[in-house]
Image (cartoon, rainbow, N blue to C red; front, side, top):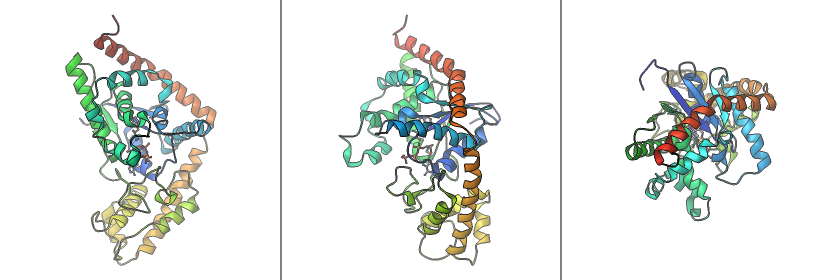
Length: 331
Ligand code: ATP
Ligand code: LTN
């Protein structure tokens, strides 16, 4: 991406499950960095969440909670737009049109669907299969230049680029082709109970992740219980020491200390000392984070999201109008 030039940035998180340190370090903290230089739009993607069964009352709460997490992370509604996906119907309308551009073979390549559906491919919802198309619509509606996401979403952003190019070549130049932004460190935070799988809100056990709403003491316990590797040195080596490398990444990002310095700091010390310090750093982070999280009322957050949608609705509608014209459904 060309440096020092204001770009349009779009990203989102699903309001389902418990948002965790992986979401924060891999995606949301990067958004915070970008909002000073770029025009940022951050969406609570509620229509993505309903691709799997949700309890309506819980979903309502999770939508507010996700927006509070954006705010507590440092997203400033004076600088960036925060809004709820379903508030702007152009998302689902454009998704339909893109459905007619996408091929079954495009979607059959999506590894996240294969992972999520597992052996139940025939019984999961059509929405879960189709979700990357809705994600492409989210991005393309706002003339997005770049999409900051965690590593697991890169294939979906690639699909978005492919669909935009295909549409443009079929109907004439319509969409801007967005770039993918993946941070160098932290793009794939691994599970605390299994360093070979990513930290995930849909993991079987809550020992897998540190939720941003976990009680600090509970989070400390999870760190102390986190799986470690054989040997006892604190060194970064993803192949040989996946667990310690993951903990070093988390430590480095939370404390803003380079991994190299941490390796020096813990030379000659054991896993126990290292984990105790990381547990404390994590608890300090959570205390500060949760204080900010709790400072917003539900009403305030709803208002911020409504205002956000009001601000950008016309951009989405204009893109959709252009697309409908190109496709030939309006005169
Ligand atoms: P699930 O695990 O149920 O698939 P999720 O935890 O991946 O959910 P999403 O809402 O799908 O949550 O992801 C939100 C953002 O967080 C995305 O940009 C995603 O790439 C990023 N992200 C998710 N998990 C991690 C992780 N373990 N490390 C780094 N980034 C992550
Ligand atoms: N699929 C993404 C969430 C998402 C998204 C988007 C991210 C939906 N629409 C548009 C970036 C841009 C996920 O993290 N599961």
